[in-house]
Structure formats: structure tokens, C-alpha cells
Length: 209
Image 1 (tube, rainbow, N blue to C red):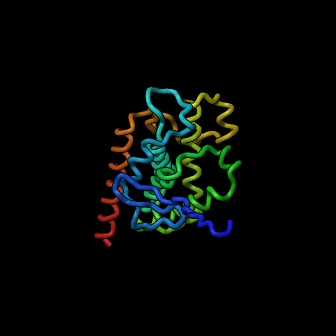
Image 2 (cartoon, rainbow, N blue to C red):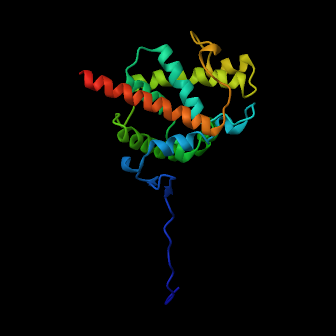
Image 3 (cartoon, one colour):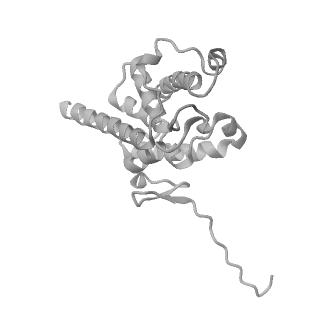
């Protein structure tokens, strides 16, 4: 319209974190990534869209701990690889845990944002921006085992249905993992503690070289 000034407000593409950081989803900076924000967020994001048994939601933080435990059982891995396993779902502290069927509907845009966030998280903690393919495949295998136990123990899947979607776990039994949903604050504490333990191990390994 001639003579009419129309203001255009750019859509906000950043999120303010409790640490005070502003994380830009379009161009996330490693400088704006804090472990405290990751642990806090993942402990409050529910797996399976919250459709799990128990008094508490089964969080992505607790899932991440289980995946890293299974990963260590399945592989002779270095501390950096264990850290990548622990952080394999770290972008979800920003974008949430989108279930696989919905990812298929949304398409590639989700994956683009996820990859940028993963790179920022990895660089923040001194890891390769992209998880090496061989390591990623091993983490995915551990992730599938975790999903099998979560599906059968928490999400109402039959054994046969879980095998169909996630495969039958080999060499890993339920007694090796702690799958009972815990309160968010406890999941946050456990995730942070495991991260700090791995960081201490990294420091010791570096000092020994």
C-alpha cells in the first residue's frame, strides 16, 4: 500500500537458557552451550511422548545414561567415544524428543537444525563436530538396544513387536541397566555426574600422554 509503512518483525530464532545464554537455532555457537542447560533440559524432555509407565516421565537424560552404559558394554571405547554416546541426543535439550514417525512427516528441516546443534555441542566440549561414522553406528546399535528395553518395560510394546522395530538385544540384559523412571532433578544430577566423571577421565588421560 502506497504511503503506508509496514513494520516487519523478524521471527525469533534463539532460545534463552537458564544459564543466561541465548542459543541461536539457525547458527548455534559453541560459546552459548552449557552443560547445566543440557542436563536441565534433557531431564525434562520425555521419551516416547510421555507414553510410559511409572510415577515419572522417562527422560532423555536417563535414556542417554542407559545408551552410554550399553555402549561401554558393547565396545572397547575411549573416553571421547563414551562422551559422544552420552551426548548423542544432546540437541533435544533445545528441540525436544520428536518421535520417529513425526520426524518422517517433518522431513529434512529437522535434521538440519539437529546437526547444527550437535556440532555446536561437540565443539563446546572438544569433540569432532560430526561423530565419526563408525562410532555413530555403534552408538545407534546401543540406542536400539535401549529402545527395545524401554519399549517392552515402559511403553507397552510386546516382545515380538519390539524385536520387529528395534531388533533383539544380544549380550545385554535388563539387570545391566537402570530403567526405572526417576524424578527430573535426579535424572539431571545423574547426567551431570556422569559427564563430569568422563571429563575427569579425559583430563587424566591427557595428563598421562
